Length: 337
Length: 132
Length: 110
Image (cartoon, rainbow over all chains, first blue to last red; front, side, top):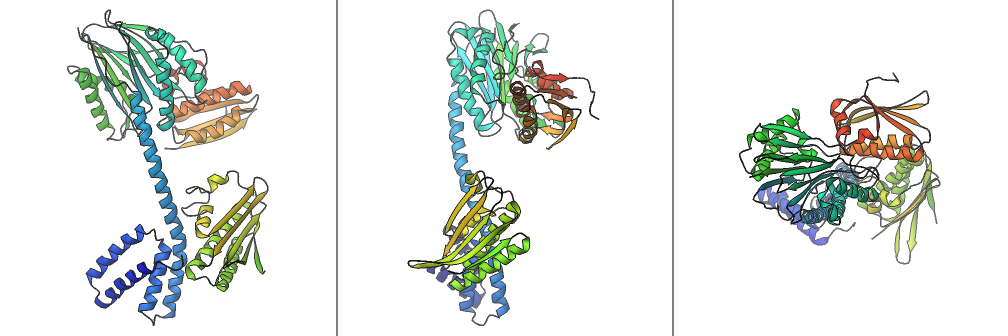
């Protein structure tokens, strides 16, 4: 646009003229207001420089020719600068659009998580999950079959962001559609593995631990698919034991088998399940060790399961200087009586 | 219709192409802002040739249509061509470094922009700026 | 956080020496180097981890992709020289059962 907006030009002319006459702060304030107008009108830097050159020429008729040439020189520089400016604006618009799409994805993802924690007089459950970014790669699930068992899944989908969110809905619906196997963790993982293997790209995978808590016998039966090991905490000896499992991550081999394990619980004992974001949390001083994590849990043992996970999270959050590097999920089950 | 062509094979020829463009833009009657825009566009097109195709040609001519007059810049080379045109035309895509560089910039500077590229055969670009 | 990749061909084998961290940011670069090697029939690819101090799940994913590629193209891949922290992740994920990992610190292409 060679011919700049006449009204803008008139406006600028009167402001500049005022300044040349009075040199007042008030005129400079008007200039600042004017620059807002420029941004609103989407005026590019080279157009502004041109506007200035045109107006200055009108107001100061006897400008030396060197100044005029120098102005043309500045104009050349501003064309390149203006291109960068406009590209920047266009990228910013696109970023805003992507961010709002991502926010919708995150909202949908929240809908995939359980709406409430199962309540039982004999089992206290606490869960804390926090996404490092907008969208999380961690997932957890409860299944109440009304048959004195609670099924519990904690899964970690490789990577973060949108691909993880897409895979998550696949796991949820796959689990929901396998009603008969609910109580057998190994069979559940084998079925799930087949679904995942068929539907996931070649360098993606999912890790998962699935367990079934027997509310009558107080046994926790579980199987793991390459998931970060959980812990069993013995209340009377105050000792932690790793819940090691043998089993390949989901989505890699069609026919994977998963070993099944069992842990008996006495009153006050804990089962702790987590995602690797808990143990992979890094600070300047290095990674947190599993032994440090258990130390923190022991410190809050006297609190409710939910209070324990909240407290562990806030300690680890501080440890990482409030910059979560990976999605965080921590679940604690405690046998009450 | 007269046409000025510059063979691009060195950084010096980029300057020659700019000079030719500025001369014609002036003749057609463009003001200083648009002169700067047209030469910047020529610069970018010539630089692309120099960097990716090594050798090519920039031609500049005055164009006249029913009730308007303008400058047309044509760039052609037999270089490697562009595989994914859509990506190259996206803001933020750059291999030569820096915001505002590349073809999206040329498109912004000019009024009309046409590109035709075949992988392994080369690239042809036509860009027109109309005098308002 | 960086990853350096050195590719050496010796006695018909393809050696990749990795140095740094294999994570979300660097694994694309590793993929670009590793996958073409596993996609050639008969290739023996040996990846040296001696100077890798960190791998995340995206990094593990690259090796899963490469393993699948060796199956599809009749090539092979072996990982050597892992530090304990890195080795642990291959162990937890069960990937050490399906990927050939050599635990001794022998460096064959010095």
